[in-house]
Amino acid sequence: AATAVPGVEEWRDGAYRRTLTLPYGHGVVALTPKPDHIACRLSLTDPRDLTRAISRCRWLLDLDADPVAVDAQLRTDPLLAPLVDAGPGRRVPRTVDGAEFAVRAVLGQQVSTA
Image 1 (tube, rainbow, N blue to C red):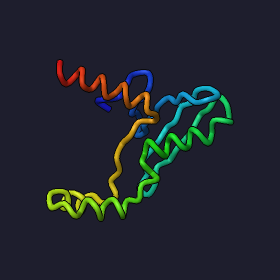
Image 2: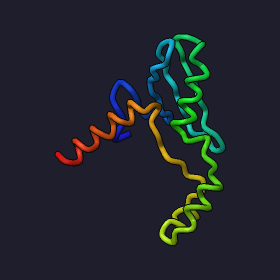
Image 3: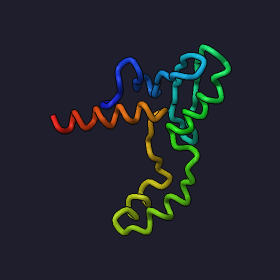
Image 4: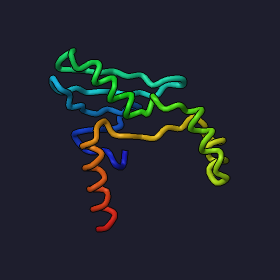
């Protein structure tokens, strides 16, 4: 929440909400952690964007990674092994698109060097 971009994303009432810029319009996604899944609620201006919006959510949450394979590889490092054992299946947080990632990287550098 400390790095959330106002007007683009927020953490409120137990859900992460953010805007999406999609080929046919804009959308809003709300992702709510549950004990065994993440609930996803999409509001789209055009239903043709449904597949793209789902794809962006999957990318954001790193859902297509194989957590068993990732854990096995990370456990080969003696420093990482205890961390993996304490929290197996962790995923890498991402952004919804490359342009957002680039802006965050540049702004992050500006803030860290200020």
